Amino acid sequence: MTATAAGSTIGTTPTDRTRTDDDATGVVTLPAARRALALCRILLAGVFLWPVADKTFGLGYATPAERAWVEGSSPTAGYLGSIESPLAGGFATLSGPAVDWLFMLGMLGTGLALLLGIGLRVAAVAGGILMLSLWLSTWPFAAGSQNPVVDQHLVFTALLAALALTRAGDTWGLGRAWAASPVPGSATWLR
Image (cartoon, rainbow, N blue to C red; front, side, top):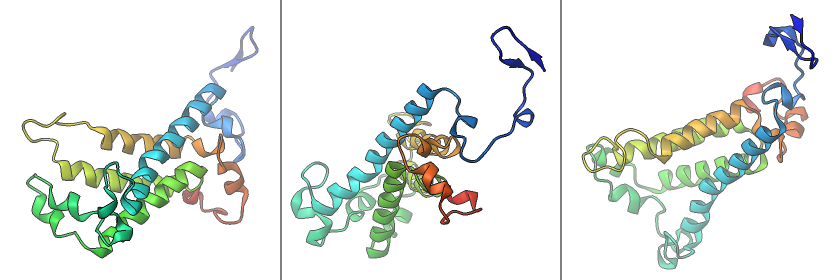
């Protein structure tokens, strides 16, 4: 390693320095970058939490009050029944109370984990599965689709992975406290 005039080192590799679990700067070093990732995490939480609130209570945006889950409607039946793709038949067979609960709990759990900054690795997997399922259901390869390859579902999936891998929950979230608690313990996949 060679020291420069500014005091930094050239040739430093990740194995040349000691990294501690509570050192949030060990992953993302710029404070502004950590804040930007935290903002992305909080905004993405809204992407997951809003549909849960709207579908549950029929707030009048995508879901009118009479089609609210609390009024006995299915939060997934309308979407699953209206898919126009080669996979439509398979997705339509999924409609039912079990899928309603799995979808809503998956969206709620992912959203809360993102909002609080805890359990981001589990949230990235669960949210990624949800987003990839929605991406497949839209069948983006069809003629006339908005984009034949990339849409918001893939972008959200990649963002979930980035947030989990960069400890985005440590900034403006409970990630650091969560990691120090006995809940995740040595199970880093719960971080």
